[in-house]
Every structure is written in C-alpha cells, then in structure tokens.
Image (cartoon, rainbow, N blue to C red; front, top):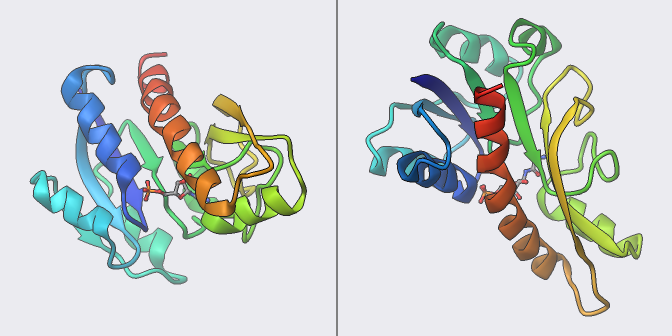
Length: 187
Ligand code: GAR
C-alpha cells in the first residue's frame, strides 16, 4: 500500500476527487495517510469527514521545517492539491521525485510566483489565449518548473470569463489528477 500526504489551502475538491478515486480503485493500492493545510480551509474539513489524520501548520517561513517534522518516513508521494505556499528549496530536494502539483493552466505558460487560482484565469483571458487547461508536474525548487507528468487542454471561447475557466479547468483536473497520481505511484 502506497502512502500519500496531501497538502491543501482551499476548498479541496481535488482532495475529494483523490479520496473518491482511491476508493473506486482508479488510483490503485494507495492510502491518504495525512492531510496538511497551511490555513483554515474546507479541505481540512473534508479530511476530518473521512477520518483522515490532518494537521494545520500556519503558513509562513517555518512551514517547510514544520512539515518535514510531521511527514511520515514511509511517505511515497506528497501531493499539492490546491496548495498555495511555496515549499523551501531544501524540502523540494529532500523529497525530489516524490512531490507533485496540479496547476490550473498549460505550463510552461502562466506559471511562477503569483500565478495561482483566479490570477491564472484572469491572465489567460487578458492574453486572449485560444486554449487553456491543467497540468500535473513534479515539484522542484523552481516554481512550476518541474517535469510535466500529464496535461490536458480545452478551447477558450469569446464568452469565457475567469469564473467559467475555473470551472472548466476543475473538470480537466478531476480527470487528469487521479491518472497522474496512479501513474507516478506505479512507475
Ligand atoms: C485548483 O484549480 C488548482 O489547480 C489550483 O487551485 C485550485 C484548487 O481547487 N492550484 C493552484 O493555483 C496552485 N498554484 P480545490 O481546492 O477545489 O482543489
């Protein structure tokens, strides 16, 4: 059984999707052993509702050090599922190849510092992009720069707003995130 630690900052619909697809067997042979939030958020409630061990470590400069202390040594994969803090380079190196993130755009476009959530969707609309999508990638010391595991796009239409893009991106995320997690765990 592979052990997954999930980091969240928000509503946690991707966390919910991971929990559900482990239960359905789409993600094989895995268990969410811990959920860590960097702020009060509904993602933490979802963990509690499913009786998954959970902890709140307030965001800030000590976050990565505190996280290192609570992550079980048996952890196979750390999954950033709507997680908004930046992990320290040392942490990324210790867990090299074992941290993945979902990003709400087609990396390498619209990534980097400040590019998260609605900021990304606003930037995509402002740039009059013809397509957007979601990307699952390995986390390295460079923000949103790690190797891409899975990516899927959709067409952006003239009627789209940041809100409609966020919805469309979420649907794509629900599809590719479980596939990417299963792939990385079973390489
Ligand atoms: C997702 O769209 C995810 O790609 C994005 O936050 C949303 C979280 O939704 N992550 C980032 O912007 C990270 N840079 P959720 O809390 O419902 O899973």
